Image 1 (spheres, rainbow, N blue to C red):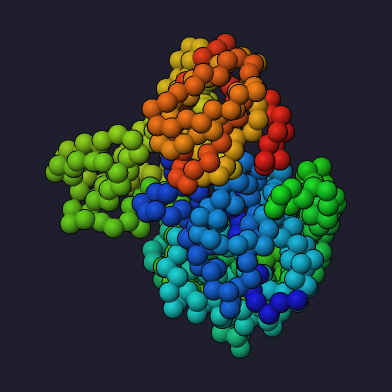
Image 2 (image 1 turned 60 degrees about the vertical axis):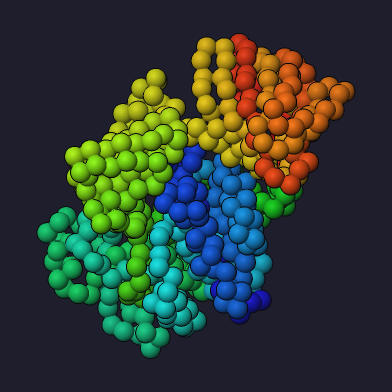
Length: 477
């Protein structure tokens, strides 16, 4: 039992609208765009008031499980749990699985707040005022959604028509409106009783489950079974949903499954600043613009350029005589386009995915994160590649071997303890070691700072699946 709100963060999306920084293996919620914290970390910070909130539950997928846990650890924020979705099944099955876990852990009288992990929100007085109104409505049995008061006739959002006001200060939901054409959006903006559908909710768990069982019984039945089916699937601090069972959930959103059908739906029209940051244009609007209207992150020189967004990871970008442009330079790809057209980045991603030569650019990010740290691909050629590897203090890679490649390690920063077969060697900056093909080896950072090294691989096959893990601290096979 709890009198606090149980937050549930949806962090499993794999969107690519912010390519080339965001990709299938590096979604926007875990990317640092213009500041030192990711959108996911900013979401966690909005839940840090322990008088208001229980520790959050995070829903994500297998690929991001350690990233979600590590980014929470960086902020010293405790999680109630991490639910791993084995396959994507839209928001209704995800919310249903979370509701089953909340009921099991906190009781059916609990109230859960469902948040997206990739929204930019000004968490000031207006925001927490909306939270309080939603909580008051939820305590009366309402299924509450947050409607954002529109600032323009946007066609990229769904809308909610608000009905009569309730005693809590929320309003009944008159209807949901799909993403409109421009003329319809202008009409709704002029009417004044329409808000953008934010995709955030406040649910009394017992009412939510009752309405799921009424309007989407298969969704809840299979989602609950997937949570509870086999407790041996609890891996470290993760709850892995049973794949076979979860796959039987209909692929449907919580809006379609419940909110558009239930008589218990309410909306809180909200005036706080909100953006789903779904395009480079939205990133530019959200950034700190200089006197020329430019937003710059990374190394760049701009001459006679206005109203533009420049983000660079590893290279120096020079722009001259441009207006209203986005130039995004990741480690291995550069996007150049008009800010006003940046909603259409997905079209380029589709083209990249369609060609064998460029498919990896759309799906794989050059920097990959692991529970021990991660690596960045530097260069790759026939029978060789080089990587920058970073290992967090006190962390070990798995004890492993490779069938098809040998490796050379050169220490750049920090101290490494390297096991090769029966030999254990301690290396410091500017020292190196050779790992022969087939040798059993392990890398450990015994120091108090992040270990950085350059790895040069040579061999007939250099794929990441050429790893035989013999011992692993993180439960990976």
